[in-house]
Image 1 (cartoon, rainbow, N blue to C red):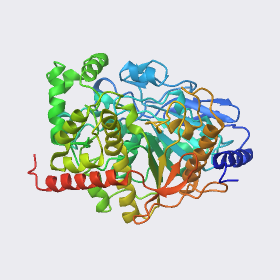
Image 2: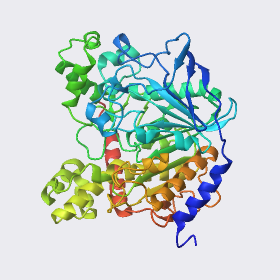
Image 3: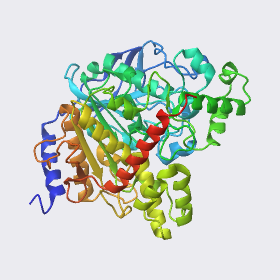
Image 4: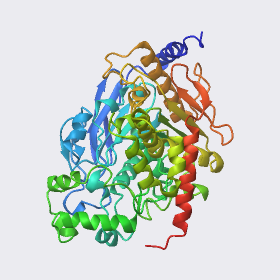
Length: 528
């Protein structure tokens, strides 16, 4: 029967297993760093929203590492989300989140099924995506109730984005003495320290923390996995469509995003000049809205984490080759049609596609073009979608899995999400897996179909098992084998979930040769 209706059988097995979970949560008021907070208990889950984990990064604290939280007196009501970090309003509206944005945004949220402190439940810390220019914890999609019902403590954390989270400037580098620009990543690290200090009071185990994120959140997770600044703050890693294994970007190299400090400082100097601010002190006195407006004119991708020598200490690929990373079990993967979100139909002609590839991929362009057929408008559209998927997400995941399988003691589990719906018949779009992971279904297709509910139960089971044990496998679930350099099998999440070969391998191999070439060129490049 499992072969005829695998997803429905999994759904039944998962629903039966839920009966053993705690029926009621009794943790309501907790003393945390800074003071006491009171959450809301509903249907066996206690939720705490808007808990500060750092001082508001405003005024003189703008463009500084997060500072200790300011204490408060009495009991703080933790019953509503804090405003999202400063960003364009369209990002907030797109996610269906409350409309408020603010520089005062360093807050986190906790959902727990624990009846009392000290239950030592596994902890899952969610880091949102948004291209490092948007994102918020308050999106309904990220509500942690359903994961908490499965016996984990779920935490979602905010971090600064756009120019507030990733502005690089020579004066800021001198001020810190160790580079500048990665304030958003430092926020994530500060939140993980808060988890270490406080999560036991919510029934969580500080020695069993899983960080997981999607898109920019998954890229962040990847960066934390190689950051000495985050060492010891987590014990498992889940990356949903993200990774950062390409070489640094000096000019217009295709498929590369992370800038070296020197290049980012020049960009930051130009941005500050565009604001009319003579120095950092003057820029800190500007209104947040004026800075955000100037940043919006630059477009997505203008603010990104950088190789600052402290949080990001080098080319992550080379760090893994040298064994310089935080060795934990990892569960990583991508979606089948990720590029559809970024490449609208009719936006690319065969000629334009070839021109873009030649501009970004140099002497490797012909090899790249050969594995992405683009002779007709329809082919060019597919090629543009696929090269975006592969260069932004799939190659990084594949490279990560291969390096991890060679260098790490912890296992790697890799997936390929290809669950199709009436609104996505050609494959799973970017971020399509999130509602299934959180169990928050419903959207453009209306109420979930039985196969949607079954897929969600399957993925939640795998994710929670991995958070608990470092292994996604469990009773009644299709066997998920570890990724191996020579076997290269991954879990396909589709109508017949199971282990099959890495998809799109020819394209990934072509990109792999391209990135190796870029890396060798950089080794011969004079320091700038």
